[in-house]
Structure formats: C-alpha cells, structure tokens
Image (tube, rainbow, N blue to C red; front, side):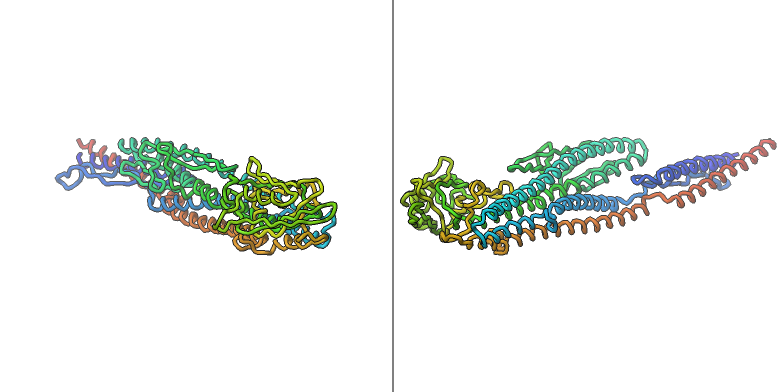
Length: 565
C-alpha cells in the first residue's frame, strides 16, 4: 500500500506542478505584446519522501518551487542610459531644427539679404549724396534691418521660453513617476516577504524607470529586499518608500527667464545631463543662450561700426542742436570708465561751426585724454571744452547725457575726424541707437530729417566718401566682431547653428541605433517568443497528461489490490 500511496503522491504533485507551469507559460503568452513585460520561467524541483525497505520513495515527486524573471540588470541599466541619451538628442535636434528655421539666409526674408540691402543703399548714396529719395531709402533699409534683427531675437526668445516651459512640465512628470516607484518599492518588498515573486509589480516599476530615464539620467541599484535606490549622478532621488521632489527655481535676466532645477528639501542643484531635462539645461545654458549672445554681438558690432564712421561725417546741413543718445553713469568719471556700452579711447575730434549767412567756419579740436596721464576726460570736461568754442553751448543733462546747441539761429555745427570713438560711444551724430539686438533702431534725428545722414567728410558739398566707407563695412574686418566683417560674422552664426543641428541629428541617429541594439538584446533575454512558449506549453501539457495517465494506472492497481483483500 505504501508503494501505491507514494505513487499517487508522485502523480498528484506532477499534475499540480505542470498545471502551475502552464499558468506561468500562459501568462507569458498573454503578455507577448507588452514591451514592459519580463518573461518568467517556472522552476521545477524534485521532492523525496522517506525510503521504504524495498528502496522506493514514499513521497517522491515534483513541485513548482519558484518563478524566475529572465532579466539582465546590467543590460537594463545600459538600456536606460541609452534611452536617456536618445531622449536628450531627440529634444535638442528638434529644438535646434526650430532655431535653424529662423535663419532663412537663402530667401528674401533672411537677415543676410537685409544686411546687403542696407549696405547697397549706402553704396548708391555715395554716387548721388544729394538725392532725397535715396537718403530716405537708406533710412528705410536701416529701419527694416533693425526690425529684422529685433524680430529674430523675439523668435529666439519664444523658443527659449517654450523650452523653459518644458522644464517645468518635465519636473512635474519626474515627481509623479518617482512617487509611483516609491509606492511600488513598498508593495514589492511586502510581496517578497510573503513569498510572492512580485513579477507584475516589478515589471510595472521597470516600465516607470524607463519613462524616468527618458526625462533624466539615472542610476538604479536593486536592494536585497527587491526595492530599488535611484540616483541622479551622486544625489539620491528614490530611497525605499521615499521619493525626493524636484522643483523649478526661476531667475530673471532682462527679458529672459532662466529656469533651474533644484531639490525641494535642500535647494541643491542636481547635475542633470541626460534625458529631456538634461537637453533643456544644455539648450538654455549654452545653445540658445549662445545664439542670443551671438545675435547681440552682431547687432552691437553693427551699431558701433556704422556709428563710428557715421559720427565723423556730415550731412547736407549741420545741426542746430543735438543730444547724445547714450548716457554716462557719472559725468565726473573718466569716459572710458563711465558705463558707456562702447568705450572711448585716447584721441580727439573736431567740431566745425558754420555761419549760415557768411559761410564762415570755425574749427575746434576737442581733446579726449584717456591716456592715463594727467587729467582724464570726463563728460563734464568734454562739455567745458565745447563751451570754449564760439557760438556753441554744451550742457550735461541730469540723466548723464550731453546736449550741444548753437548759441544763435545763424550757426550750425558738424563733427569730423573722431579717432577716439567718443562720439559713437555717446551716440552723437550716430546712425543707429541702442546697444544690441533688443533695442537697435535708426536715430530719430535722421528719421525726422534724412538730410542729416552723414555722407560727406571734411564738410565738402556733394561728397559721398563717408557713405562709401559705411558701405564697405560689410566686408571690412572689425575688432568688435572678433576680427570678422559684419557679413562674415553673420555667416558664422548660420554655420554654427547648422553645425550644431547636424551634430545633434547625427547623435540622435547613433543613440537610436544603440537603443535598438540593446532592446533587441533585451528581447532575446526577457522578451516572449511565442514559438518557444508554445513548445514549453506542449511539453508541460504532455507531462500533465502523462501524470494523469500515471494516476489512472495506479488507481487501477489499487482497485486490484482491494479485490485481493
């Protein structure tokens, strides 16, 4: 009877074990289309009972002792890292594509066309400096160029702000996901302590970790109790059932709002370099901000170089009154330390006063001593020198600007031969106003009276020499533009944006291929093969059927034994 009972136990254990194994296989098949699912393998272990005198086991058989997740944790971390890189490159490539579209240099709407039109207008004015219509065209082309630069900057700021908003949305997603992972940590630890494999919970957590890696670069370490600790660089983000929250701190620099990610508990700034958040950091801090700086440098260089030439020239008539467009912080400070955007240097300039009735001219040299020796030139000093010129009056206004006026209605004055750059620095007899892409504009004095456009040099009537010098600025190297000409500097901006966009696209293609390769490796380990699962199912089905047949045979034997009793 012991032999028969032991055989029944063997058959029964086989039925139960293979039935459970088929349930595991069925679950694999059901999740064949679930990309977050990790294939599970039933683990069978033979059991043994007490030995009978005849040498047979009293309770030998088989049982399902565990379910093993087929996963390579090192591969998972590599896949998360590659996913973070791909997400980072994808966002940068898309954003730089938007930025590149703002530079349609091959169309009539491009800034290069506006630059050429502006310098072409001065070239035409050189030949006919007394033509009123061409003078008006010069003003219009200058206004159109300034408007194009301002519009381009506004469009870049729009992209900047959109990217900044993405940072806030990304941080909200990170906080939501980390909270869910912390909750799953608790559930997984509880399930494992109760003997459950917690496969479904761990699959869900792995899916969330993948989503998290798309948002930021993370390092994941699994603990003995099944929980995971997640780090951003060396800063813990998730520990057990606790998830640290992130927040966005915003600082304002002019019209730019700079978002910065910090930990809510200690205001520490994590070193985020990967994922969407890392891409936002890179775009705001280097790529977009760098492009804004380049555009501001271009506009600033354009303003200064044109004004430097224009301020030493003369129009068809002189001024009766003029006020500088730029102000010093303190009129008692040396002009090279007075807060001007364009710093003057040691030199001088000439003022010519003309009597409109007699044509008599008086020329005065105004010295701008910035040599570091003796009394240094200040705005007050400049005004005092001008006041020594007959029929001229100079006043330093309360806001730090300089006002120069004729002493009577019969006198006008012009400027020439400024080798100090002080006229351009103060914005006297200038073509442009402003100091960058945000505020570049044509001087309102010229808009009101185009005859003041300074085409001539040395007060020669009909002279277009100064207009020619301005037209040549498109190809003349400028110290303010790192030795490049205005047009060459603009081309360097276009080239830089194009190069960065191409590099981002190339990086995206590389990391996409890496993700595909790693995903294929993961599928070979953790993915479900329907063919393989079908074979396993048939094998366990046959074993189940064999166990059932075995029990039937043992039952028949038992019936025969009972008849003998």
